[in-house]
Image (tube, rainbow, N blue to C red; front, side, top):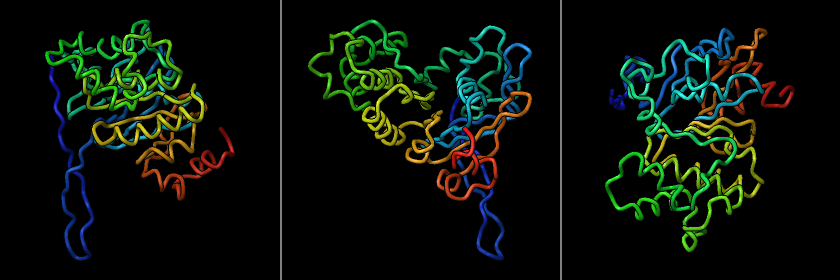
Length: 279
């Protein structure tokens, strides 16, 4: 089993006029390089290069069918669970290729967690849901303290602390999604992937999840897929806009600071999408 480590990546930064550019370390949490994803013989994602910074929220936006969910699932090797699916190119985590021989995908997914579109708590108690990942990963510390810590980080502890043995399915939709986030972060991953985590939630629950995302980036690097332009603008630091070509393959149009994407995009396609001229 290969253990991967974070490695700062060097980039060029402009210096004052008349001085040479200086090297500075940019700490990428995870990076796609020339990534192509297939379902059988069908190309779903074409040549995507996307560096996602550590302790940033990176939003992935674009119309339906452009490969947003496929991209995020390639980042922790969940794409390969689909029969016939494969990738070309690289995904780097800590400078190492996650698809290299010897990398354990189960161990990898414990370090790059996933929160899905629809809340999917296990048919167990609230406590058992959070403790599940800790147990299967051989947690040696105080289980009750770890569960409480995770629920506090997910802003759910005060709502459930007196009913930890109640069924998780008795929670509201928004609470269930925060429970799934608590379950994902209980094992302390470095990256949390979120595939449209608010699409099934009401506005109040959505606001709670967005507030949570802003707090979580202090500890984790977050990549979020969303169809909600306002949500991307509110919660993310950087935004990637994907589009689909005539062959139905998704490709990256533009990647930049979120403020720039939404106020002064470089590409006409980006402007047309964020202003609602197509969806």
